[in-house]
Length: 118
Image (cartoon, rainbow, N blue to C red):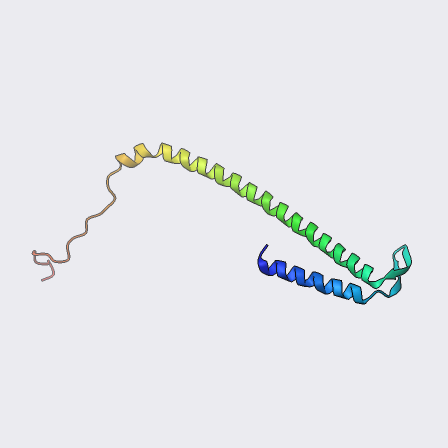
């Protein structure tokens, strides 16, 4: 984690703490079948922040696991490809050394012989 991320997380935590301390008014909360008549606003804010952090942690962990699986699959493909390259290189040396050189000699640009066009 970079220092900027740590600083931003710390600043966000401080802002939430200040908000929670300043807002202690009790409120009624209803969610689906859950009902609470007197819950401080600060508690709701802290619970919401904690749930949001937990969701982000789970999503980040799922992404990390997915990337590791993908990395493992690509690493396995690389090992198979390297083994295949090694097999092909082991079969090639006899064929490569017996072939003549592929460098073609070009005629020199300056020739002492007259050209047939003249």
